[in-house]
Image (tube, rainbow, N blue to C red; front, side, top):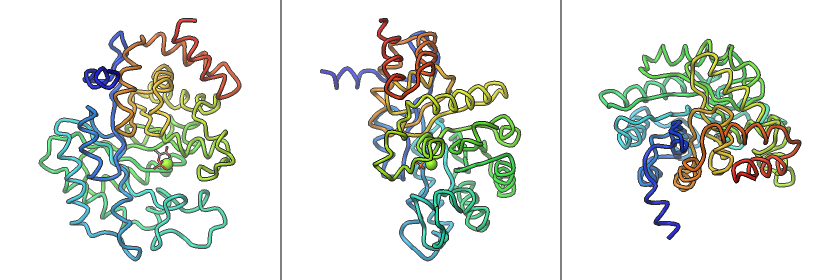
Length: 316
Ligand code: PEP
Ligand code: MG
């Protein structure tokens, strides 16, 4: 019965008073597209492109192979939005031919955009492949860089996109506290932000996302993380630009309401979570979400934040 009710609740994501929050899917390759379409995703909010690079440990996939894979995902969302993240190599996603082997702290080393700026030919090929894949399709393409630390990073990425002749919006992921703190300066170079809350939690709390012993600090309900989300969302609003979330945080229905209340403009998650988030968001007004967000931020722990938001939303 619950399943039937969820399946019936299709349509765009919105609060009960009609404030729209597009619900997008995180996909790891063409194989994930069917589930995203079935869940009623309004597009893709995070297309992780690493899968293409896993077959060959010695070199990058050919431009043709990339065009084919990107086109499959873009074609699945005619008129929809697809946000492609360029290669995020290093740390938890090491690639033999790109990732330095001798770093004492790979999560703090050459990874994400840093890797691509060190290997401009890899970035160029990927951006060209995206431009070719999108040409002639009615899709609304957005391309973003992982691990942007500052304005210089955002500028270098935007320049590489322009040089590749990409007709798309260029964006920056906010995964490092410095990017949240100086979001307005980064937005002088790019057109949108997307919060990667998995890495943002890791770097905010100095808690490795792969170490179970510190998982308490990886909890996205941590008020310090909510503060950074609020800062990025407010900065984007002040610049007239959008700020989505594409980390795991967006897949928790209650937290999705809080993120909406913090000013986040879209939510991207694994397809399986979309019906639950849609159904929960539809129960509350934007003002209720804002009150829940304020209550969560006024606490001192993840557990208290969760309870405070729950109390507001259940009308206690
Ligand atoms: C994140 O860090 O939250 C994110 C969405 O990227 P990934 O999990 O692929 O690092
Ligand atoms: Mg990340």
